[in-house]
Image 1 (spheres, rainbow over the protein chains, first blue to last red):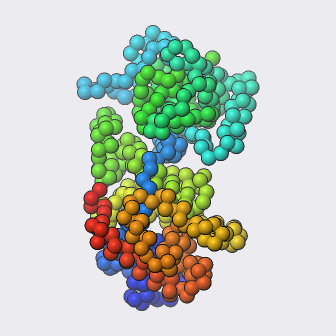
Image 2 (image 1 turned 90 degrees about the vertical axis):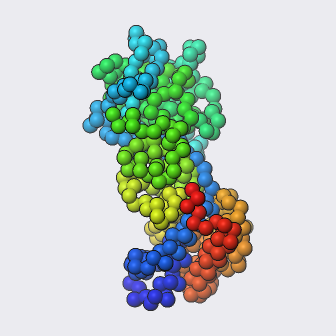
Length: 246
Length: 201
């Protein structure tokens, strides 16, 4: 425990405090001092402002947004997927009928974010290899359901394997690498009270090889869209790939 | 429903940071997504610089943005910019983690990471993160003693006592160099017209 610090000593520590370089034992006294001394607090605030200028501003990585989104999303088992009610000034987004596999020319898109864990790790080929192996293992599970996701010309672009416990893996089979400012996003095709709908199932990033996701609840297929920013609330069309689970 | 009251993506991109935080307080995910788009990379970069561990850096970044979502009123726009707030939170949290891990790490390993002699001005790597040529110039203009003390404290996550130990300097000297260096930095930036930068943003 630090002894009682004089005002001069506290002033001398303001620089270190602004950099989080003060000693823990001194911090409480410094915080109290700052609460009572606007000039001292301004010095600390200004220093932190300046230090923040030194860090490059880069767009947040899609993988991070997927994790944040998963953590802040309401538990789908509690919310039971909230449908959007179309309003006079907003047309409900539509998705193509082929993905739904039914005569649903104007399917209402359910906009909800579910608890998805996007496990893609840009930093390690080992991680990719582990995910690829996990996807391979899942495919050999007799209870697994699989979907071939094809583009508008019917060319297979990705495969999804989906396990009964809600775990799924999506593997790239021909999705082109996107520019850094775009990202692929995975959607689960579900049945809503008013018909087929899609629900965001995770952000895949611009250059996905294999990714794991989690989606709890009945699902009939998956789709992948190309988005300008991570965490789109409705898929941008045309879809990059789509397909029903078998 | 509330979702239809949210601004469009284009509108969100045009919002000020303060308006973004208002949106976050209203639990509008688009606002948090935009805050992440603007500052997520910087938050990860700073955490990674301090922690030297990409996985932990992303954990910290997630924690910072989820914290903003859950407690947006902790950000006080009168005290600075959202960027400064997020990066200060990131730095504090990263430093806490570094220090918590120190008991499990060998001192030698950490020392090697911080040693300019072995890594060739390792703190210079941090400059790759730096935007703002004038801010960098101001930092470069500091004396070697001031600059190295600030860099070791900020990017190395060391306390001033640890910096003093690392540089083999008296604690009071290091404490004084950090404060005088930061004061010189603020003065230089003011002279450049970079005063209260958050007011411009």
